[in-house]
Amino acid sequence: MLQAPPAEPGMREDEVDTPALLIDLDAFEHNLDTMAALLAPTGAKLRAHAKTHKSPVVAKLQMARGAIGQCVQKVAEAEALAWGGVPDVLVTNQVVTPRKLARLAALARICKVGLCVDDAEQIALAEQAAEAAGVRLPVLVEIDVGMGRAGVEHGPPAVALAERIAASRHLIFGGLQAYHGSAQHMRAPEQRMAAIAEAAARSRRTVEQLKQRGLDCPIVGGAGTGTFRHEAASGVYTEIQAGSYAFMDVDYGKNDDAPPFRNALFVLSTVMSRATPGVAVVDCGHKGVAVDSGMPGVWERPGLRYAGASDEHGKILIEDGTAPALGEKLRLVPGHCDPTVDRYDWYVGVRKGRVECLWPIAARGGMA
Ligand code: PLP
Ligand code: MN
Figure (cartoon, rainbow, N blue to C red):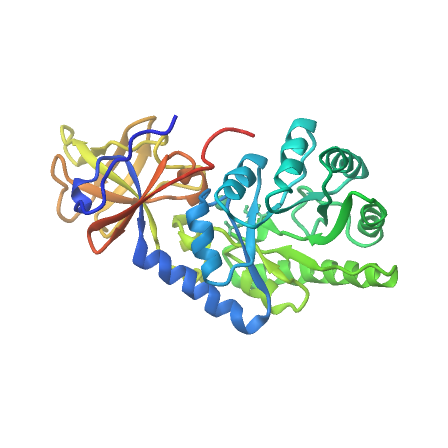
């Protein structure tokens, strides 16, 4: 159930109830503009990943700045976007349960919606769902470009799947999914560049072999916030799937050449106990901010260190500088933006200290 929003438009930021998920709108808009400007000369298009933001409102703002569509990881995310009016959605994942496939095929009646496969069995399942719904589904073949997660081997095994899709009356061969996830947070830029050079080489080889078999490859999709400049410059990738760029987080800030985006996402917290000397306890533990990629930062308070997260308590060590008072609000910078967003019902959009808007996080939660 959607909870009551923690704020109202017009409030001062320090009046927002906590914990609350803030978007600094100036920084967020800067990030969207920066991505659009970086991609414009490359010819690669942005299909932003909605696993980060889970919101049709954010999707539409990205598309107003040139994004051609959205990626999602889950059928429930595709539904939230499609029902929110997003016209073009790609599930960058395999979908294998018949109920989910039926839901996905039903969406194809209201928007363009595609999915990825790396096995002939998935193709047969997608085909059945498309036939039953009376739609044609675009299907991309996911190739392993170096991360060893999902993805069929590039080259002939990928071409064989593409031919199987192209031969179906209910499916359309949509192209290649070629995402290299483990390259995103390699700290050294040379390492990231080398990983994407290999990913682009595997993709290029596969596109050439598809062509030899008479198959056009309309999309080569991949890339995240850590590597997108390499994919965009490769000449082979046509769609960039970055997600975190819109918000940033502590983890991306740790790349040696941190991407040129500002921190736009914060969890606003309140100091609720100062009983222990040298410690400020805030009302945001790991149920309020994801710690899978490390602890959150404390925004613009260099003397404070968020050192430990329990369920609903965050322990901040006062290492130097001004100690925060009981009741004081502190902005936390999430270690990892995507799972942090998933913990909230509302974005509280703030600009220059005032609440400007509240956006529901329509696709949050659930496993579907
Ligand atoms: N594309 C795919 C398939 C992903 O799984 C992810 C993230 O894991 C991304 C793109 C976006 O990555 P990021 O949020 O790091 O920009
Ligand atoms: Mn992530």
